[in-house]
Amino acid sequence: MAKKSTNAYAEYSFFQSVESSFDKAAKFTNYEQGLLEQIKACNSVYQMRFPVKIGGKIEVIEAYRVQHSHHKLPCKGGIRYSMGVNQDEVMALASLMTYKCATVNVPFGGGKGGIKIDPKKYTVDELERITRRYAAELIKKNFIGPGTDVPAPDYGSGEREMGWILDTYTSMKPGEIDAAGCITGKAISQGGVRGRKEATGLGVFYGVRELCNVPEDMKKLGLTTGIEGKRVAVQGLGNVGYHAAYFFQKHGAILVALSEMEGTIYNPKGLDVDAVFKCKQETGSILNYKGATKTTKKASDVLEADCDILIPAALENVIDINNAGKIKAKIIGEAANGPLTPEADEILIKKGAVVIPDMYLNAGGVTVSYFEWLKNLSHVRYGRMEKRFQENNHNAMLKTVEEMTGKKVSAAERAVIAHGPDEVDLVYSGLEDTMIGSFHEIREVYKAHKKIDDMRTAAFVNAINKIGESYLQLGIFP
Ligand code: GLU
Image (cartoon, rainbow, N blue to C red; front, side):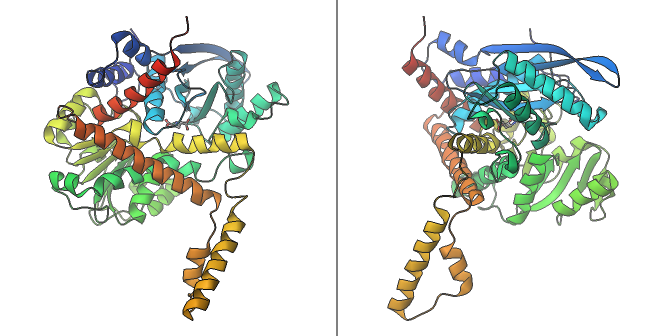
């Protein structure tokens, strides 16, 4: 049996918990057992140990890359840098990537990588050596490449690490024209796409907003329609949590509680996420934030905050049998991967809360990674060809309207109407459309099956149907 996850909150095999949600949903599909087993299984698991010179001594690093499904290629998924990394965790995360990509119609199989280190304990030089060696191991075994497997950032990694991996890849594969597509989440100057950094948090916002915009669903929860004025609590101010909080605040929600490793801060009238973030950077702790009415030294307290919407944006299994009953939020938006154990899921369903599942809600990151990959293969920035053409067209149209009506549009109106799309406009628009479209696909499955009582099961059914269909159309290679 796979080893349990070792993160501080875990008491559950993460992979088993994903399997258990899959099995619950599989009952609502018509595929034969063998095919379901194939969809569920991790196709390739690469466990590695490699030496790196740290402070003049040799250190053996434990790392993984898992390709969960090859029904579509390349495989796709981030690389986690954390002491909690183990085979079970990477397998679970890779399988979630498969369902995630199917949910948002991104034509990739799921993958995930992990390096078992605490990145804070290493210098930048040492981290670079570890990352480059990990990339070289992937290249040697054909576990990376624009058509085979495309990693991205995850917990503990970012643009900087993606740059090192790209450079290692291009050094070892000289002349490969599509090499930039071997990795996403790169800096823009290295072929990254505008909007990728905030994509997961923005996707979380779009997804929760979509639910809040359905009057029927809000009435059932006893909440008003719309995002404005909703009380939101966010666990974790990493890249995903920070951006989710930022977009909620920007669109009129009230951030009543925020947490980081060191504890939780509250203010029923609202916390300013940028000021809290600045305080963390300057003093090392959000607990020093002057605008809080209450602080506690427990990071997990945020989960029990009095709020309408709870956004766990940290690690897996943080809501379990012990604290699920204490959650006051009516909407739980899974910004992290796997923040709820299956038992917690059941408790929250019984309480009548809506859990918006990770495989849908945090898929904004991989959606925009897909846009980045397409950009890399086409070797041109989004909007480069059409922006000016569209602006000229819009201005000509405005001129005709002005001549026909004898009235002038204001400079502010002209700026909005004539504006041709920049890369970031197109990326946001593609992401918004994806999050809205996928929400309603899942909701339709939910509505169509009277016995499905939660959104996660509906999302799994939706994803399994797409993957199953793909397997059947391809046939089984002898
Ligand atoms: N690590 C992110 C996730 O879990 C992004 C994956 C990607 O962009 O490939 O979804």
